[in-house]
Image 1 (tube, rainbow over the protein chains, first blue to last red):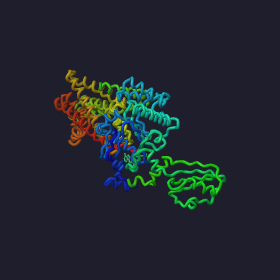
Image 2 (cartoon, rainbow over the protein chains, first blue to last red):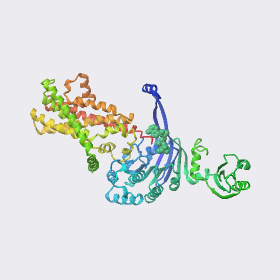
Image 3 (cartoon, helix red, strand yellow):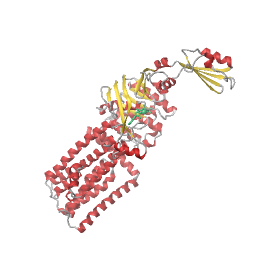
Amino acid sequence: MIQVENLNKTFKTYKRGTGLAGAIKGIFKREIIEKHAVKNMNFTIQDGEMVGYIGANGAGKSTTIKMMSGILVPTSGKCEINGVIPYLNRKENAKQIGVVFGQRTQLWWDLPLVESFGILKEIYEVSDKDYKVRYEFMNDLLGLKDFISSPVRTLSLGQRMRADLAASLIHNPKILYLDEPTIGLDIMVKASMLKGIRDINNEFKTTVILTTHDLQDIEELCKRIIIIDQGEKIYDGSIKEIKNTYGYMKNISVDLASLDGAGGLDLNTVLQKNTTDLQVEICGASLSVSYNKNKIQSGDILSAIIKHTPILDVTIKETAIEEIVKNIYSGKTGLGKQL
Amino acid sequence: MKIQRFFKIYSIFTSQYLKRIMEYRFDFITGLIGFFFIQIIGILFIQVVFEQIPDINGWSYYEILFIYGFAQIPRGLDHLLTDNLWFLSFNIVVKGEFDRYLLRPINPLFQLLSEVFQPDAFGELIVGIVLLSISIVKLNISFSILNIFLLIISIIAGTVIYASIKLIFASLSFWFKDSRSVMHMVYSVSDFAKYPVTIYGKVVQFIICYIIPFGFTAFFPAAYFVNKLPVLFAIGGTVMMSLIFACLSYWIWLQGINKYESAGS
Ligand SMILES: Nc1ncnc2c1ncn2[C@@H]1O[C@H](COP(=O)(O)OP(=O)(O)OP(=O)(O)O)[C@@H](O)[C@H]1O
Ligand SMILES: [Mg+2]
């Protein structure tokens, strides 16, 4: 179980003046800037859960993971991983976690992958038998055979990411932190990686905490998401619930029979709705209408359009989780600022 | 069991490292030649000085050669084993590469040091052993069991002092991100240790004995073997200093780790 209570991390940086004068001034008097990367974070994650940890760039996701993995010492607050406080007992903590940072490999740059695995096997004290079984399992999942004897520095991004995931699993950790594990992967590799993560969670009841900017990954893997903004938690719950609560915007796409068919049509005036509840985008012969399903009927929109111009085809879509999260980040849902 | 594991990991790294060196043979050989070259200039310098004056502050040519040769050995061993500390001081911390050492269940300092094995150091080691052998014969230093034992002890202690001083200043990178220049400055103080400390002024003597104690990596232990200092002060002092600095440096290292901030991306 992962317990995070009132966790904070503040980075102190020094403001540098511009130009030579600023630099000289900086030697004598430096202005300290405090960056609150994580603020009063609270959450509990049970064994075997898969949780999506999402937020905009710089929201504090990686910083939280670094505190949970023992890299960073928190400024204040509590963080316990299965009863172990990571920064006080790094060794014990390291045995139970696996970590992948998408942007940076944890492997030895110059060593052939197979040697890296050999060293990790020793470091984690994995028996020959276990190692063999796990290696086979991961090879099936991630197709390591093609590049197992290449030095890590010669691997492509996707190959390296697969290697990193495999390396983080050599000791069969109880908890897996994945910080943007799918950046730069092609569709095939990504699909097999996501499947791999799901299989590992199924088979070993591994707890997985996943950050990514690709919300489809999250929707595919996680029931629960935690959304943070500027270091603070703004949502913690199921994806289903957030869709019900904030996914009230729907979208109608209409293909018109003629190119300028939508000319002179002003749906906002016709239906007497303002632009928060009804937004229209015209692109050549197609019309895209986003509307608040609680306030407007799709039939009304369609009949207004048909009255104006003949149409060929219609598609109606629920709001994707992406849209909701975009709205949350930009403050449209009212989540975040108040909470 | 545990020690075995450390050895195994170390040997995997070292053999990989040597394999790679064989790949880049040219780099390795030029490195070695470079080191020999520096050493030969150093010895020529002593020779030139002694052609002018028969002894310096009561030290004969071979006594000075003994100190000079002795100084190369702890320095060479340290160079062989702890070269990655340089890399820590200007690269590993500031780039956030230190993350990985904290993510594995084995001592971070061991991991760091085991990754690099620096065969350039054989230049220093070979020169040191040759000079030491020549001067031992010329000075008629006795080959008693006790002396051999004390020689080994003082070489180990000297190596520990070198490594500790480097560790202290490399650890400063946890606070200041890049500590290479101060580390360079301090390391160059070790050049003073190749000659008898008595030839320097009081301030320099104080610094290389007690502040940055490179004096204990060569001059003090060597002075015992040429009968200039009693064993208790010379060897005992060296061992004491190495213990004090080993503890101090490891403590600073641990404080540094807790100050580590990783990198933004
Ligand atoms: N080592 C550091 N020193 C100073 N500031 C830092 C450091 N690491 C992170 N920060 C700051 O803390 C904030 C949170 O950074 P963090 O890396 O946790 O964001 P993130 O949510 O992972 O973003 P991204 O999606 O871009 O990876 C940022 O404003 C960043 O500038
Ligand atoms: Mg990040």
